[in-house]
Amino acid sequence: MTGKTTSAGLVMAILKKDIRVYSRNMIYLFLTVLSLAFFVAIFWLVPDTVDEEITLAIFPPLSVMLSEGRESLIDRGVPPELLEEFDEIEAAFGEEGFELVEFESEEDLVKALRSELEVYRTEPGRFVTRAPGSDSPIPEGASEINLDIGMAFSSSFLSDAVLGRQSAVTVYVDAAVPEEIRGAMQSLIREIAFQLAGHELPVEIPAEETIVLGQDRLGDQISMRDRMRPLIAFFIMMMETFALASLISNEVLQRTVTALTVTPMRTWHFLLAKTIFGTALAMGQAVIILALVGAFTAANWPLLLLIVLLGSVLFTAVAMLVGSAGKDFIGQLMFSMLFLIPMMIPSFAVLFPGSVAAWVRVLPSYPVVRLLYDVTVHDYLWADSVVSLGHAALWAIAIYCVGLFVLKRKVAAL
Image (cartoon, rainbow, N blue to C red):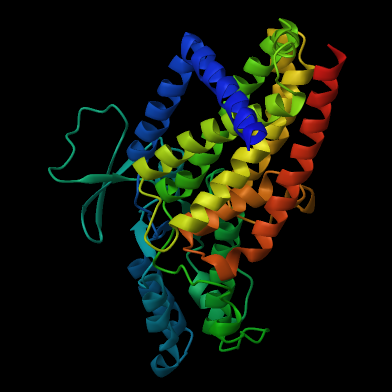
């Protein structure tokens, strides 16, 4: 019993010393407070809304294109009852998710997409344009809009489509428009042409339930603020690697560990104290940041605490590796970046979702980022997280064992 009490007392003594040293290091203390304040401020400043409409610019105006198409076909002897498809074309552009901006000239359309012409919405379905910096006043209550994509149809597009003839359509896109939006607009043009020609699309469209995998986010897209919530906690844990690595490196270089060995302290006391201190430091700040950004709920808080614990152990292990290898501040910084830059990659894969490469999935930090994201954004609970939890635990244990082994050998060699 006495031995256990003595061991606990030794570990507590080392922990108190580490806390005292950390609190006296004004640089890391200042950076810790600044990081917490900065990330919380950024979180609340990032927009929490998502624009789910595609702003589509077209030339010529839809009404002009439809009327000219009807007149051209009637002049060619096409019966009016065969032009009912025109009404469906007009309805397609008026569907939810589309905001149509019509231009009188293709030149103005291109200028607007290049931001050489400002477009303002005065009321639903009505727009005005003005040159940037011009003296013409902005209409009262008007809101500026950004165009995503533009289409310039030939004047004979509708009649050509009905008659089965080739017709040119130019699609203008900004470089920032995702590839899937470009493909969707091209598919829309093909569908219009097939519909006007009286043909079905040359593919069989599967039922909707076979397309939507997982939670259907149609009309409920994830805002950038929600995407950032788990990543802020991840970055806070990762940044504490520098503080703990610096503490370990200084004790190794200054041979503080050697001085402590003249006491009843054993190497494992030192390693256990560093593990507890590093894990508590990273986890404590991550919990604070998650609480400040409203990540905890009555259902997810135990799971979220476990995920943060696994992440904190992972980065504590990395700090042990870095701290035992660094010979000075620059060396420690270089070793830190060598480990942390690859571990940052999964966070960007989650922030900008899509197909995650196989090599990204095998990085040690991926399961932690994935879990933080799924639990705070998609409301995953225990049953949904078992596999990722096991993956994260295996990585944390493996890297911790390596870090423990390297640091132990370094302490023993002093």
